[in-house]
Length: 116
Image (cartoon, rainbow, N blue to C red):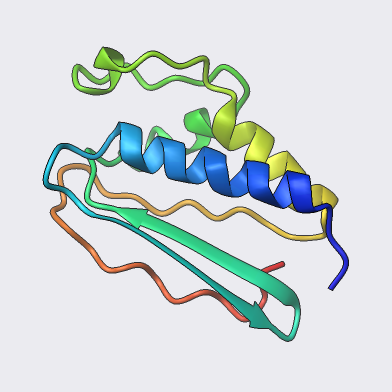
């Protein structure tokens, strides 16, 4: 597999930062990685506040910040997820985001076989 180590690290840091930032004390954040035929599959899951389906496209846009009362307690400029998405795409991959508002701890989705 050929990849820019610094950019892959940046993707992972950004995803983990978001997961930790929006997960309350006592919550769970899980990270998994595996090599798949298409390359590398990374998964980050958490038991945080979640994002509603209507807001998923917004958080994937530059400067797209969802104004939930809990989420606005945390500063951010709305660039982490869009940058991670762009870096994944530059590596020939995709960034998929799944979320449900106010759902308790959930196990990480298995890494898809088609991930980068």
